[in-house]
Length: 267
Image 1: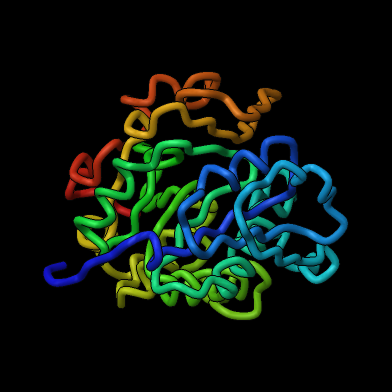
Image 2: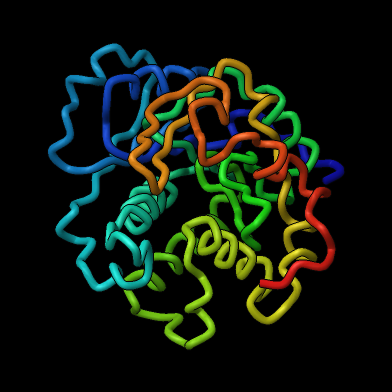
């Protein structure tokens, strides 16, 4: 985007999720950013943040306010409301961000070197930037939601609509039943902010125009987290996708560039 000079002062940081050992390191990794928001839950153990060296704003959500009507909408196999919880703290963080752009990451992940990620963003600030963690090849319209960076206003509207969708307050037509995975839901509602309805239009056109993928291999010394549908539970594993039997090898399961997505792929 010619003529646009973007610095760290234009980017808010949103760290979302439960507080745990290592969240202090996550926050400290964003030294140099002027606006850092920690969006978590009431009654979290704030003593785990005693070694935080950066200034940050603490905002909290209540599990009680999430309700239970959304359970049928996501993770139908287990009935766990992880998707809503993630989007609740993500939304609450982004609405408290004060800058034009927001970078969202999780409290249980660490990215000590985002230089390539940020360089890619500075070159293409009109796109949403994410990684290949969760950008599945075999499932259409997946937009990775572990780490992403984009326009604050678009993210705010996107996350607000996701909350309405998951709580069945809106977007109740039959066609939305095809949105099952958290990454698909994020992809759909983010593209809606760019005037693309990917359930009616070609999602690949939208993704190729508005998404930029930085592979995790370009984020040195990162620690990623997650949980598979098996008994395998992952917490802070170095070098994605190591430790993730559900994702190995990454080259055959994940897109590492938006240009790897074939043009013909039906949602």
